[in-house]
Image (cartoon, rainbow, N blue to C red; front, side, top):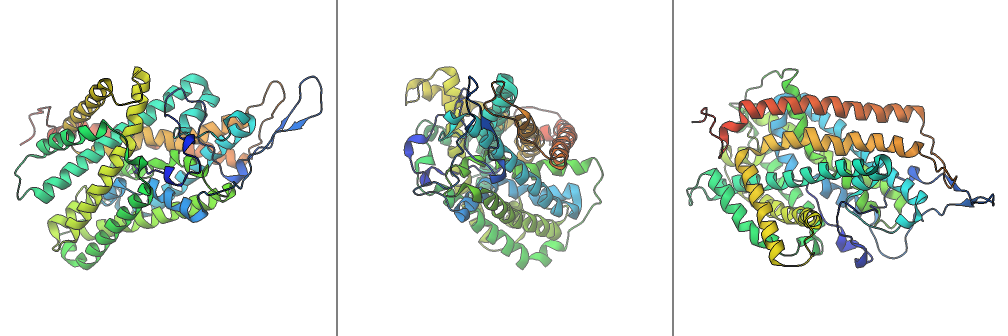
Amino acid sequence: MADIVDIEDVKVSSGRQSQQTFHSTGSCPAACPDGGARSVSQASGGGAPEPTATPPPVRAGKGLSLWMAAVFIMGEMCGSGMLSLPYALTHMGFMGAPLIGLIGLGSGYCACCLARCWVLLENRHPELRGQHTQQPLSDIAFHCLGKPGRIFAAVCMCINTFGTCIVYVLIVAQMLQALLGGHIQMHYCIWILVLSVALVPPTWFGSPKDIRGIGVMALATTVLAWLLSMGQLAVHFDTLHQNATFTQPGFLPFFLGIGPILYSYGGACTLPTIQIDMINREHFTYSVMLGYLGSVLLFAPLAALGYAASGDQVEKNILQTLKLHTPGVEPAAAEIIFIVHLLTAFFVILNPFAQQMEALAGIPHKFSLRRLVFRTGLMGLLVVLGETIPDFIELIQLLGSTTIATTAFILPSLMYILLARQSDPEGRWTSVPVPLWEKCVLLTMALLGIVVGITSTVMTTQEIIQYGLDSSCLINTGRSE
């Protein structure tokens, strides 16, 4: 999943940060400009119609510029997901490189649809204006599908968040073993356990979200690691390519490569949280275009060059390929940079998830013994799941084809259609016409998300059952060495 970064350091008012609970009723006021209100409020009793106030596109004071918003959008997208993209092409061939761009285009369009949904809610329900939440999907789902919709969307987001935390721990444990294996002889499963235990105490306290500039720092570390990796691939291309082989991908195995690509764009459903803080909200579309263009320019070249250099021999983590098969300190430096990035992102996304779970369990939002026990238990569950499926690529494929396909493609497309057709029985606001061509695009996006998601999920599940559990630290399949 794309790594989640913080934008609280550029907010105007610190009091607008909300607790992220399932029962929140406001979400992030964000939208593409063409999703603005077109409805009119009808006064009761036959009075003259009263125009519904539209949130001003330009906000007073400080906020995100068009370019800074694009930076944060790239920060949402670029992270751990891109490490597995070269390996994804072993299932897809070079056709996967342009597909990375096409999926990015669709993901950006769905993010705009989600943002337009929120603007519709703002214009229809003025009390929601100015509220801030990092769960826009579940809040919009409530207004489209009621309480079951909110619960379904929130469960998908929580599974995705917790699963991403597991992926981070597995990748960091792998990198630590590669960096320190010559000095500390431990099995990979032990590294997972040791790292998780070391991460427990910091989870009891506050989140790094309170550190100013953490979002920019997250993107900066990603770009730096990308530059080191691309340089190393280019310089040692001939060495890597000597033993490279390329297998023609089959039709069904092709879908195994879809999951990692979807995972890379997993932050799309939270992008409306950025638009609320823009100085000029009408620039959000341009920020999305710039942010996704930058993300594709990072994703596609790394995937294509990594696969072209190593072929089917590329490791599941491209940094591991560079570490094992190229000289120099650059691969180790890239791994250290990514370890810092992933650990920071781990605390940023785990803290709000833990707060959500604590709210459901009735645990006060303060440091206490109950919080200590609860969060230690969460880390224990993380260890059990991680040790059961220690191969991070299997989790990335599964998350990408299930929860991310649902939250980043299927739900935003369907919810915009449902929300636009709603009208108030009392005549305070009317439905918003959606052109036929756009309905066809939205339904196509949702249908593709369903078909591709189901097919990829089936293929990934079979892969885990047949091969993924062989490396399990807790399950003995009898097939491992």
